[in-house]
Length: 172
Image 1 (spheres, one colour):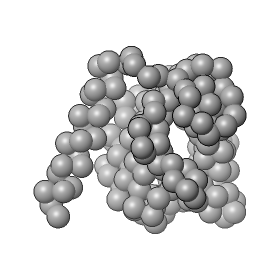
Image 2 (cartoon, rainbow, N blue to C red):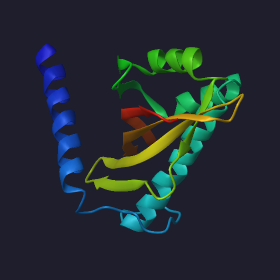
Image 3 (spheres, rainbow, N blue to C red):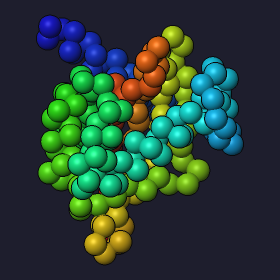
């Protein structure tokens, strides 16, 4: 079991560095459109819409219904890698930490033009971008980071299986 976890970690690190180094290939950054087809523009539209829905629920997670909606996008065994906060191995743990640390405290804002979508043949897509975090009470933005989300597409729809949030920096 430990060897499988190490292999997954090696794979994710390799995947991250491959994407960061190449930043080329089948990148979909076209004008968003709707649909689920495999072509890049439709995939970009689909993932862009899912991102907006996922983070709208995140931004409003003080409401139990919104927190539940946010959780509904996550695979039960989602892995969340955060460069400052460590690793969370399940949806339940991720949602508990979100409830404790995020809800009512801050919101996420996607940096315009930063979203990129990479298809994963036979699996789904990788979403990559940059976001800013802003305090809800003061509306003052205080931090920024890069993110990478792995989406799995199945007959029942799309779900998140991995999230990486890294490069966190304070904003003055």
